[in-house]
Length: 141
Length: 169
Image 1: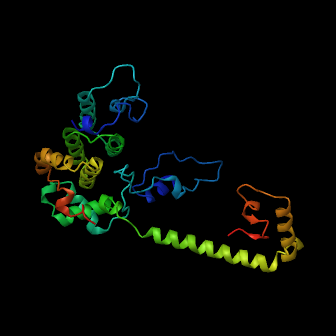
Image 2: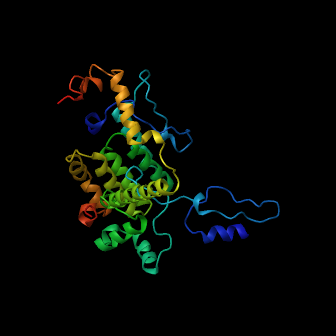
Image 3: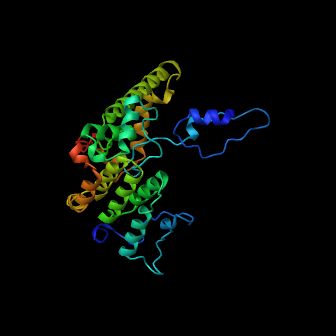
């Protein structure tokens, strides 16, 4: 839904990595005009699976997040939810707050995306005890 | 042995290359620029290393508390944990700095200094201008240009009133 509105072209920049066992989520998705295009649902499912890995390590979380932020889209709430749960497994609250800041920043001028995202994430935020940057006052200088 | 001690002293920073002993000289010194660095960028929200590498005693105990329920942390503790991992928040990253004043000031200073050099050059380096710049010579040049009707349509000679021997009003 967000990507239909925000994504300018399907052939956006994608990270190109070697496929390795355990890193299948980082499969190259190149911008060819021919060939099968990944649907939005497939994209979301791939990223949710990536962050849902039970023994995800800190590097994989960082790599996944930095790659995801590199895309020309705002991640769906379910992807952010999976990432926040990964932070919980890694006992990293700071990264969880950082992720929320990053997706707010990704929305750019579209100010209505972030409140929607927080609304959808409310159950997860309450369950895990993550405060939003606004609650902590670090969204202001 | 020496290598592992050196590695342990470097703390949490990850070392990607394997340490090797080289020709009996021991372990090569690991330069700081070869290790992962911290930087605040919007496009790279989670840097490779935490901002604060050496934790104080309170910070260590806070990290212990982080292992438990996050709902039990106060807002100040959460902000403290954030500040351990990160230097600037996104809001602080995007803040306008006063750097432009330094840049403009520096540019003007350099331009001024260049001006001083030019003035000094004119006084001490360059010799006198050629004699063809004398006013009498220039007058003769102008007369010659008018005599040969240089640029008679739109230029020099067009502005000269040859009957009255003066510039056209």
